[in-house]
Length: 140
Image 1 (cartoon, rainbow, N blue to C red):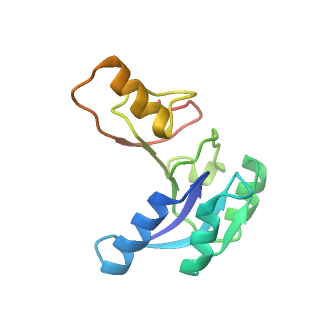
Image 2: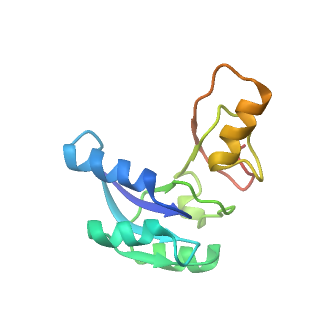
Image 3: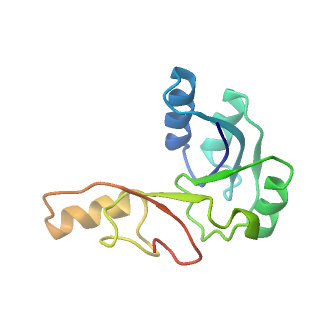
């Protein structure tokens, strides 16, 4: 069973999905902690409602200090809009969920509705999402 941290910046829609899948047994994970880089992110309120420890941390150092207090083996960037650098021990354990098919519509500025607007503006007939291991480069 994975012991995961969820990093988010906004409404926590992916947190909702993780929580639901864990409750129904289709996701074998336990959410240990939720961290947002935005102080008033709705996702923090949702995390607390679900019973998860929830923190605001504006940068990598603060986030990593919080994560060090939990036995994490997976970090999910779930709508996290800041470039994240994990501690070395977790460098290969960070998953990003990006709302387009990388390499299209990715990098700085391509998040949330901005991605979908760009897809429509280009007239693309197919879209999707990419789940990938993250590193120090946006959506690489």
